[in-house]
Amino acid sequence: MVENQPVRGQWVRLGEAWRQLCANSEYPPAVRALLGEAVAASVLLAATLKFQGRLTLQLNGEGAVRLLVAQCTHQFGVRAIAHYDQALAATISGDLARGGQAFRALTGGGGRFTVTVEADERNLRYQGIVPLSGTSLAESLEDYFNASEQLPTRVRLAGDAGRCAGLLVQKLPGADQVQASTAWPAAQRAVVRLGPAALLDQPVEPLLRGLLPSYDVRLFSASPVAFECRCGEGRVTSLLRALGAQEVRSILAEEGAVTVTCEFCGRPYRFDAEAVDALFIHPGTDEASALIH
Ligand SMILES: [Zn+2]
Image (cartoon, rainbow, N blue to C red; front, side, top):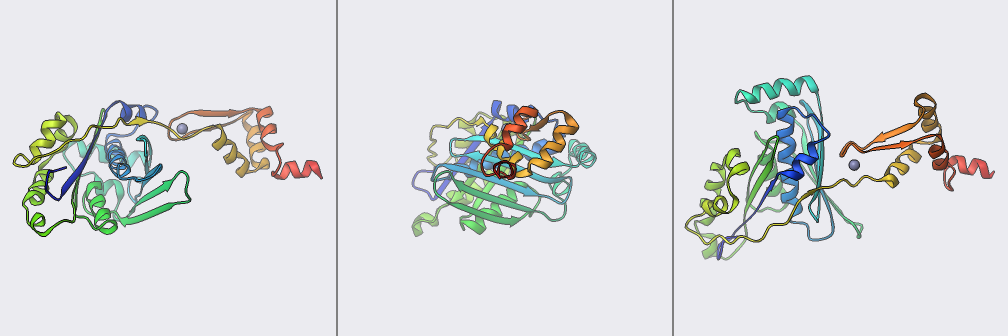
């Protein structure tokens, strides 16, 4: 935060957590960069959670990227995934390497951006949707803040193979004389000038203090962020039960076993004939009722 000024911000840079998150996927560079930006954005947004839960950022595109999901919990556990068209994404990655703009090509002419906030305990769910606008994910996020919180916000995001990073700066409502201060325009100018290389590489303390050299910038200690998947045996079991005994048994007959692989972390869940039997001999399922009657 900036002492005595109506300006505050959040910053994130991931290394190891980001590399672990991508370890099971071979994303083309342009898709990986966008996914990195989305992961950084999900952490910046999750930092504003006021309860235990999670925040999900979902991008539905009409270009090479059809679906992108980045999720961050209140304890900063992140996971993410992108579905994309391989050939289109490879072409866009080539253009990107030649200095082209990837965002519109990746997301197509339209598309939307959804932020969902869910609480663990209370039955609380909030969802905000904005159209994908402008030439970057950061611009869409700025629109989201303008629409949902009505706070003027500037966002910068970056991602590459090794790291992803983001910075969010907001103007807070405040007293008139503070509103007339030059800190907010100065912060905006500084944030807009900040390029991906600085965001990804520069030592953070001089980077943040250097944004507003004539003001007293106060930095708080950072929280660790880790790659963490929410999948588990229980979730997969529910998924298979929802598919139904007939469908699951037909897969079993064809494949010899039913294997469900988590898209987020790549962990395989394997069910052999015995495990499939156990799945459906359980009260509440159709087959169990059939057995009882
Ligand atoms: Zn998983």
